Image (cartoon, rainbow, N blue to C red; front, side, top):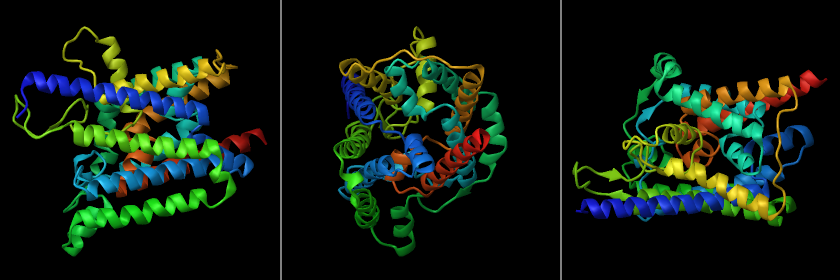
Length: 369
């Protein structure tokens, strides 16, 4: 069993590693224009699938990486927020739709907002604050009550975790690790094959964005789920994952962590407000993006162009904050981190996000016409 001093040292190491990986994430996203909303927009407005192939490549790498670790016994999907036995499909779907619609109005999802802040976009700084406040309200405030009293009531407790390897292992009476290995190769390989099938999927920036982001998501899973796992906490004697807000293993997600970052900044002197992987990852993405923007001389101050522009971003930020918490994640949280666990709830949330984004873009095009 670790001593308290060793636990503090381990926590610091996990936080520094998560911060470093977030810097890499932000740098790659800034350099390659990695963006889920941008990928959908390119398809709807121009028929260009390049950025969607980049996103699929990242998802494929994350699926392969995570399930390889499950097969090796390093991590377990059930230790994450996404693969618990409690299934809230309606919350995943409704929250996903809200988030997807909102990210189009706000010119990007949570991670893109942080990347834009690093590049000097003051509109995204406003989105950051409004998203964080609305997300915190949906975690613990007024909209949290509405969430719990409405969509969260529609739930089911499954006999196993809601990730596909656990479901199939339970149904067949076989080993979960074997299912993780086979399904990881099948799903991850299919995503990689599709993303690399055409020349636009093999361009340098697409490969950098897809392979880099996918590898970072996988690495954070290992940092939190393996390195940061403590079998017996020295004070509680319970199984724990250090430096996480959910008390479970985590990879990157950028809705609730933005809320916790604002909370940490506002109540910094409160000793109970400790740094977590979510908080340092939020700060790290901004730092990585800013470093690349400054190095490439693309850093530009940018403000709102009109009252309508301001209103769209404010409404979009609220929808992302409320929707992201309701869906249990964003395009990165559910779309990459959650999908890598092969969680059914994550697949529903991702479908909701993509549907919401497509509807918002088609609505904008209709308005222009």
